[in-house]
Amino acid sequence: MGHSKKIAATASVFILVNSIAGLLGQYSNPDFIIDWHLTSILLITVFIGGQIGSRISNNYFTPIQLKKATAILIAFVSIRILLKYLPF
Image (cartoon, rainbow, N blue to C red; front, side, top):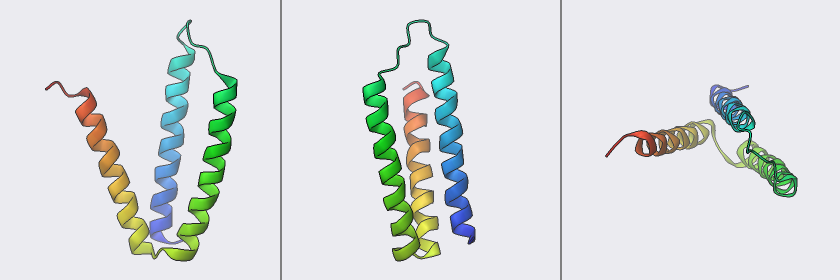
């Protein structure tokens, strides 16, 4: 596996762990209710999107393009988190 693909895989694992932590936090709320219809639609959508993204990245992108895309994604998410939680 190339270096850029390891970076993308690591970012994906981080997103998964972060999402699980968020779900556990929501689950600890006694008023939390899961909308199983919406959840099933989102699971299917994420699976299909992951398959499409995986095939596109394997067939059309160079390792440097994957590195740049991952860097842009991480920067975007970081800035959004900073703007959300920093008092302005």
